[in-house]
Length: 471
Ligand code: F0G
Image (cartoon, rainbow, N blue to C red; front, side, top):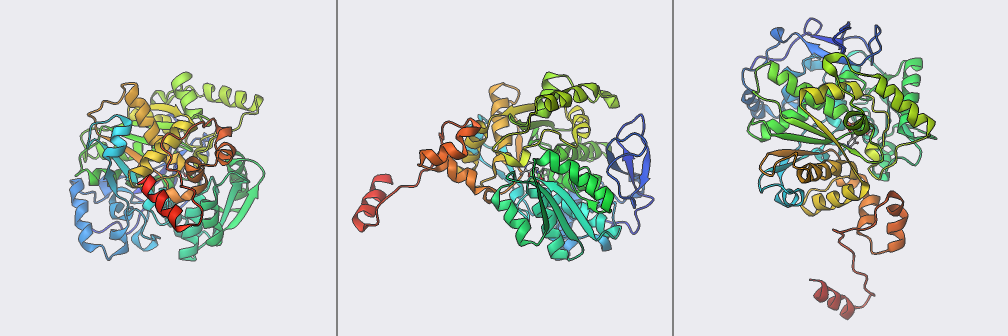
């Protein structure tokens, strides 16, 4: 395979996603929206000027050079498919070494045939979530343009990831915005440990997101939330690794939790590009799973008929819905704090992706999320609540008959189990008061798959008896 590009200006562009506008901007500019019409931006490429391999299996050759950080990274070993930066500017910390694991335990819970359900375990990333895939890409762009500070609003994983890249590379200072009380301790502890300037505001993620956009623009701080189109270029590679693990065979379904809708948008872009390049012959279907307490996409797509419409979306339904949310003072509310978001910034990219991947959207309750999470844990991987929405959603789609038991399904486990121990311990507790305190208010009433600790007095015989009784 030829070496990656030496310069990118004539290869990559930033481009408005709206076909009716299509305005383009240089990749050297910092922007998160189109000047002409205010829409989101894509990174687009002149593929005829890029040394794209003829088959996806050619990427496997990079494994033989895995002491080169750019071949080792699970993002940058696909550099030819995200050629917006020159190799000397790439900032990598070994992200993307994530396995795709078949799980017959979870398959049986979901109602799939053995061997048909796979878990893409993004919790294995350096900061413990899929965010590192996108952060290495946005951070690389930030470094390319010489940024010295980078900011994000976060429910905890984006901020942990940004804080880590700043801390390891020493290239920038991290400024993170979080809603107070809206972040799990696992994630907050990462940002604090890694030395991020942590701004805790009264309000939730949607408030923090609005503020960080204002502050970044006023102070010229580089914004790394997924409105940044470079983030999504990195997140495309999650799908490349899924394909690689399946011997480059396209699965039938990709099931992913939906929050700010960056992943789903990135996945659709990846498959669209691979198909255009002739590297795959078909595109899998996409299922995006909202938590019921943060179900903007579900409501708009499944109930109110929002569609991309080949680039002419009926966007008035979005304005009306947001006006209703405001009038009712409704805020997002779910145990899956990572996806506790009512105003997803990538909404329009996402509905474009749903059109491209013949997608569906579902919502699941906190009860369904926690039961699915316990099953993922019992099968040996473990994930945080938001991630388990994918498994709960796959189960729902099986029950509805939308997914067939014999199809090949990949659920994305977006974040590590240790990100949110409070939810896990509360689910398994034998202390009813603690259960009610943490989960009762969320409508969770039972823990069908709880593994309760056995309470025993500090006495040798009693301990022996307890072990005999329980094993
Ligand atoms: N799962 C986890 C574990 C997340 O942290 C997030 C988003 C999502 C799913 C949703 O992904 O936004 O691409 O639809 N977390 C963001 C954050 C919002 O700030 O860490 P999405």
